[in-house]
Length: 277
Image 1 (cartoon, one colour):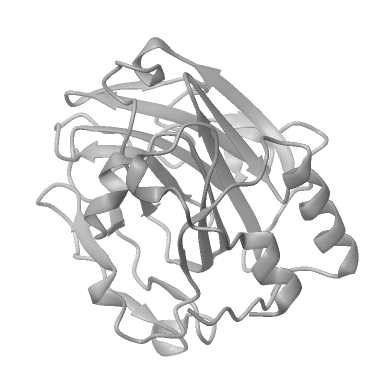
Image 2 (cartoon, one colour):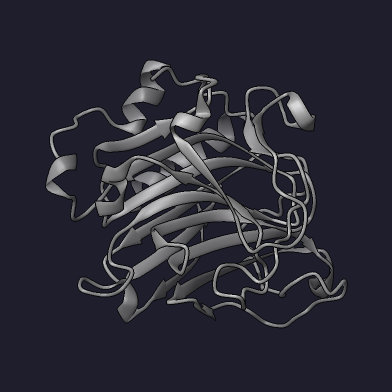
């Protein structure tokens, strides 16, 4: 697959920061999946899910349609759908789920995506997605009014439809539009709306770690993430709620334990970057 490697949001300093952050984490491994959306047949790779039955349906396209940046993939509308599949999600929306059946067996991996908020609400990544009632969600919210305009985040888990939000600090929020997360640490540069940044979520054993532009935001360790746990393995998805959102350059890299079917793939993300693919 040809990579655009646009680094839409970064200068050389960003590239160096991102690479440094990556190399100081777990050792690099095989590329399990990558998508730069240069192939317009995205429906062969991604399956759209709208939570709940209420509200307007999503509209996932490749830009510049619908106001998305050219060549980016995303949802052009402000989607909020009932209470989610379990009926009690405080921020249900829409997500694009990876179709590759092999991804259901992924255990330890790192997924990165360039992201572009077109509103100030929720967007992020799902990891170890088992089904619509069982997965891990990491998200950020731009310019959170409850936090004086700071960038907020959380890492959440859903087990059999029941949610645990590890970094929830309040809700329903100033506008009554969902929950309030936690401000990102001071080491993380604030990213306003309509500016590209990179979100990375790493799942390794019983621990989930969130990075923004290569800088660690937070980690969560939980028995449900450990080997034998309900969320030991699973695929990925691109998520947004009440937030038109763009994504690009999605890369999944294996780390730690790997399913047998994934071994032997020698090309790496960083090799692709260096080669300019």
